[in-house]
Image (cartoon, rainbow, N blue to C red; front, side, top):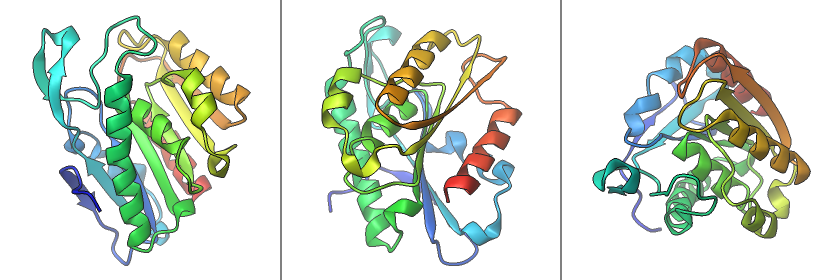
Length: 219
């Protein structure tokens, strides 16, 4: 297997029987969502391993070419910018999926999760993966390039559960872009659960509680 990106892992008390691979947003790293694990208050019986990869460091155009951790560079108001980076990052995430399967985790016990840019990669990767996953968590994010998704999605993950949540006052990714993604995913036959909250580009307590319910349902 190719060398994995740097990452953090949180193991359950016993042997892991499920995995959550959680992808951070622009300029953050794997530590960003590490504190959420105890807040999810998940039953120990689920035996979940949490994996938090760090995105590669790259130049970001909208930040004046400053280098930071990011899954892709992009140009605002362009539907397809960043596609090349997204494909590369999705390939990196596939290595993590493949490794969890090699470690004995059934694909149907793996959740792909992501916030903002991380959610874009989670959707891009999960909808194209050849093994049936438990579900996808897509927070404050959107579906990149509907046309290519429609052409490249796999039968294995048709109708997969997808939880989308978004802030009604998000200044980074307007909620209408997320709502359009929701409708496109429904058109493609996915089981989308949608939640919106009175907040910006962030995570709130109610959203964490809903995420916990989603994880317990699909696992």
